[in-house]
Image (cartoon, rainbow, N blue to C red; front, side, top):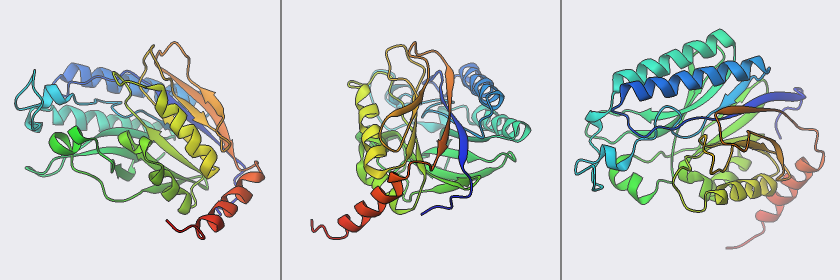
Length: 282
């Protein structure tokens, strides 16, 4: 099990405005400016880490990017994206992380050499302002894998002040195998970023990740867009209950809470599940 010398870790989860047009330079800058303000809010609240939703800088629309668009979905034309602006804003976010002394987990598109499709990624920016890790979404939707992105291949973990986290993005939230895999990697929690705008059954993802937290006896941070029709972002404890949630009005905000290892039943539950799973034949 993870080292237990660090008693608590203060983290923040954000719900922020998600825009869907990566050709719109002004929109990209506006999203990144909001991210930076929420980073400052998290730092002011004493957080060591702040976690953002999928699409925090931009969640490219399959219609906007389509070669056949704007009314028909087809192969994405990534030459239309304002890459220079995206990379400039990512750089400013990283620099601010270093100034504030706070870790940041932020979603963005990771460009690959053409004609390879990019990754849909989560960047881990350290409190020194450097990229410490990158996770690429593995369980892509049919549209994403067919037209938009390349699939990632591996889980990713990183540590902050003795606490180990896994990363999940997008459709990963619907696959319990992703979360069971992180339990085997001895994480204290999984930071899950999910773009929920316009999807039917949006509250389903909150129900799913609460179940994963309870089933694996670890913390989950669920970051989603700022959206009055919900769901709203929050941090889930190792028994599946909400430890903190952003405002239900869906406005851009952060929720801050202390995560810890003080639930003495969690290590016992994790050990019991591991031993039991080893005896199951599928």
